[in-house]
Length: 110
Length: 114
Image (tube, rainbow over all chains, first blue to last red; front, top):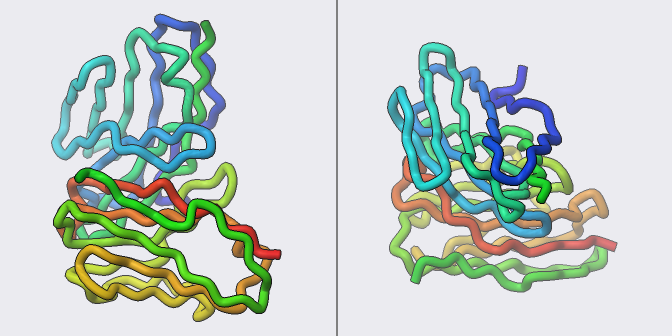
């Protein structure tokens, strides 16, 4: 079983819709959770981090964490074509090592 | 300065060549990382340096040799690579050695081994 699993894509939503990206992890000692955005041909960029159960909002992005269910999600409200990218979920064990999921490719159609 | 700078951006090398990838950050970050990313795959950890000392080697073949000359610089020396080593090589840094604040990635070096 993979340590970090993301919902299989690709995911396509119309402009203005809510995009929902999901991630589960297997290691209960994980402490820090991240979402990175990676445009095609570019490097990953950290867009959200979350450490405690509940929701964390930053602009149009909301990260949700449920440690009991070992589940992390990212909601993108009012999706824009510029949000089209691959979104990588990453889990950190506080030992300096982050493990990445395979990524979900999002396409926002105008 | 909030960037991680990697050079070169593109590199083509033969299987008998020796080359080096360079990475630099001036954010005062205490840990630096090398990741390898193949097309449509997630980044895979290769090495971690904490306070300039190698702390994690993910069983990487010896044809990849990391070096951390100081707290701002990270090199990856390449020798006798194989075509399957062609990938995007990403350098990253983190504020502290736990990595709990996430990574800042460089733009990467796209390596092609011929």
